[in-house]
Image (cartoon, rainbow, N blue to C red; front, side, top):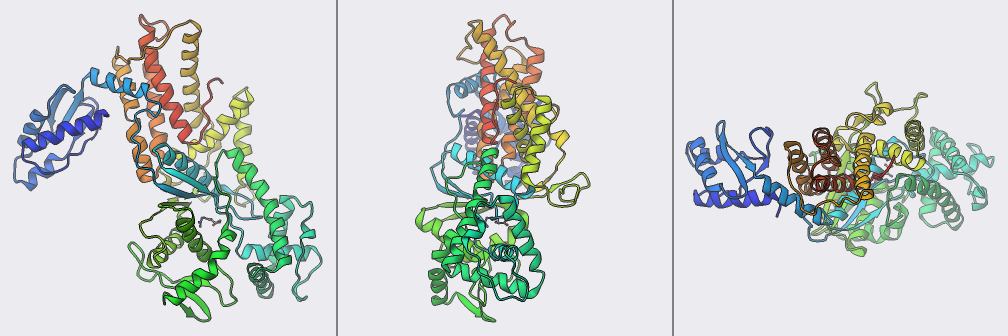
Length: 567
Ligand code: ARG
């Protein structure tokens, strides 16, 4: 049992003794000089029971005393401060050290689908995808770590209007001009094509769609494709394969893991029966020739527009494929929880899909969660762009980080880990909703709250442990406390299981990033204050180092970073 759980149990029985019928809560002390843990309940409980809060707090504090605490005291208007005994801290640290999962509280496994990345065929990956890949992958790891049964799905954008635009771009390249009859482009047009060439086709097709007639052509091509035209289907498969190969390379570089490389197109077979079902049950209705479904629900504005399921020309839309995919995930994969990672501009779209899924009974008993995140900004505070004003490509951002890190780290493997880690840590070291400024020099710095700082701290601890091993000194299996700075770093480690639980509960990797930083920071103070290899008892202090190494290493992994033992 963690010290926090043990303290809660002590407090619960103190509440009972005092006739208080509330569940106690304990937080970490904001003022460590007063104690390690703190309970702020009593002011509220006293008000409720018309008692003097300080007196009530004193009675509870008295009843909560026990072997776990060196001191339980009342401060201010009725806060209770708990100082753990060194023995309790050391015992819990010892438990963590012996446990491969570092005393993490595992949950009942829930079948979870996590949908992140969401790149689109033939469109370049950009800064927005960076966040979805980084946050999604970290949350995937966190959910696995607490014991869920997780499947990740990249949910490729491979079925919408951009496919029609792409086909139109290919037609243009083959000599088609606005005004000509609608061209059907066969697969040979994409023979040996690079992803850059494909991207160029999309750009020109998209530009052509400024013109209404061309846009109508692109729509028509999209509908034909969705209707199963064999020639277009083959062309589509070629384009998708070219794009996917390049996406997979970037995803591989970023170290994101996908169990499923499915796309919007995979929901296609589901669309017609789903629309029939929704229509037959009177849920979907015709509006202006299109098929729509009303959206309502908790937290949604009153005037939220209906979700468009099918256009007049029969084309399925983004919401349609999302709904159909959701239904498949529940029915075919047995998803009990589905997590979507997109930027906050898709909040209404995702909320609408959730609302319809609930109304239609497609998600009974299923937890649907939308993980949103804010925008990456440039130094000017506006959404991050390259110098020429276009959205920065993800590959360029990765290459920039790698170039900068190889200036600082000689070993090439370590440089890759540090460069990518810098990008990831910058993304995860603030609460995801806030967004952040993309400042490569700050991200890649070895000072401050950065990825390189953490990786360097980790490598330094590893080098201490390696040196000890070379000298034949074995870390103690029991952790002990020889100095206040040692106690402080152990306290930071003890908070790891709570950080993990909170990260999973709130789907917030920042909890882990912050924990890693606090541990590393406390470790550097410990290391300044306390010699390790030259200590009288190196084995004892090595146990602390070992635990710190394990906690930071685990946090880095949960953030999707690669811990490097040497740089
Ligand atoms: N492809 C979409 C886009 O680029 C993102 C997909 C997000 N996932 C989802 N299930 N809607 O905007």
